[in-house]
Image (tube, rainbow, N blue to C red; front, side, top):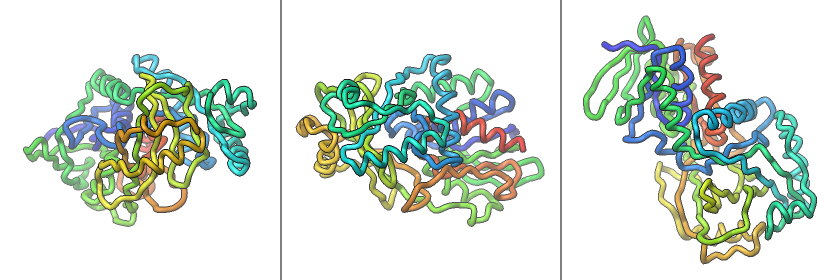
Length: 365
């Protein structure tokens, strides 16, 4: 039976970042049940590098987003990953929202994000022509990234360190043994087993399903999973957007915001809808809702140029309120060498390198 140091389940951006980091000092394999890496949450998002503004003080999201952002920009430069530190306006379209901006700025300061600044009325018009805003904050450290190229750079790191990425390989179960785990895998139809000292569950939307097949892990450590789908509409035609435009956040996300990708394509989203099963169907009927939300801050929107594009799904652990990342180690569940990651939604991409370092530290304890 083949024996390795660490097996990582899931080749999304989180699994790949952990694999790249751990491979500096260990023999690592990362497996992916699909034919390609990052087919779910990692590639169906806004591709934004977040500053770390909104999250509660001392939460994992706050700490790992800020730390991850500080690692991500240098990584992109080193590995020639396309990115643009484009900056973001957080806008208030009325006086009530303007008061919320004060709270947002305080959150940012609490999270050591000290570069937010208020824009004057003149600056708002210069930074965001045609935008309806009574007040706005500017976040210069917010950016956009090519998430596919970023994940490729992590695979490059992994393979340079003699680690392996293996697609079309499904995790079946794991049993604890004296020197780690005996893991059973379905490798493109062929059943095989291997021994690993450490087992990391970074399966994203499938993390709960994976956790249920790890022998000895009590169900009490497996949180509920709720699929929260978010749709995006793209805008076909010229537009005045030079920076990202975000309204004040909503309960389950950051609202229907405007992002510009590295090719200059303008898109809006995501909305939020809890669904019963994992599916990426889009609903053109939601266009009216998008038009209403967008026109609050961009009255000149031409609805005829707005077209349904794609949908992503967030792995929510609760139906109400803010949720934090859940990263469990033996200190939590008592199983040496096992790390479970649950609820890694936004800002997971931004935080990925910091999450990887955090997981490495958890394994070393």
